Image (cartoon, rainbow, N blue to C red):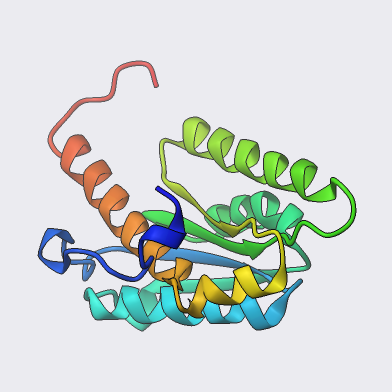
Length: 171
């Protein structure tokens, strides 16, 4: 669904599991810092709102969105995490660089999720211009950071609910 028809910060809070027993990683791109830091604020506040403890939220910054998968892998290797949230913003601009970066980040996070069995959340804005980014980083369409946090909580809870009491075979 296009964000222009939905506020990214609106969701049914009663469907969100408690995050009090979960550990999260947040990797934030420094490029487009005004936008990515607003995404971070929305993400962090939402994790706290749903019970995550500040000491169980681990944050690092990377230079740009392209570095998000590598930063996520590094953070995941340093901490015992239930989900890793990656926040960035790649504005289209005059060249096709955005397509290469966005595809690389999406593929990198997908590969990490598959390889580890852990959720790596794609919280990267891919707007055509700065105004569209601002609209999705706390502006008129809400905050994509909120959506990323809710996704992380739900996916971490899903992983916990499907692995408790089961034996691992092979993987």
